Length: 214
Image (cartoon, rainbow, N blue to C red; front, side, top):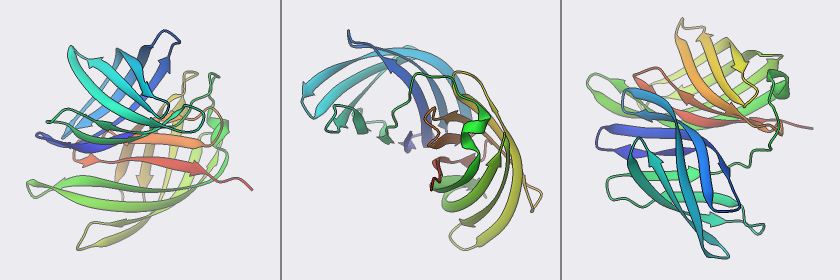
């Protein structure tokens, strides 16, 4: 889960990828760059630098991107940073079990916080939101409290999620202010929650919905 800034505007992305023992990477990227959304497969490779760091190279649509990740005590990436001067991005990593996903993995309560940007009156403006939601077999009911700097909004919402076996998902919601919200996402196969990336052109938001467990 990445977030940052590019010359074209705010940047956010979700990557789901598989690392092989020979250093190869294969994955799919969901990306927002300013008003534009894209979704495409990619390849790359990783090379250990030390016991606590790894160098990563990925090729997106013919463009090479480089980053470095720091590892946890089990050698699993936890956070990474982009290294090219025209790309500022910080990423948080989640381990994805190699099993199929279903919407029922999310059943129960979940919470999230997000920071993003919305385009109003010719400029991108920062915003933040906290949410509490409850899922039941692909249907969600929730409440969101959002700050847009000078204004704060509260709204309830209802929506659905469509989950493919590869854990990629489509989320559609409508709130009590009659606003539609649309996302692509990645469900975590261990049931710990899901990652989401907004696809509405004037809103760039990315976040992690954490599934609450007793």
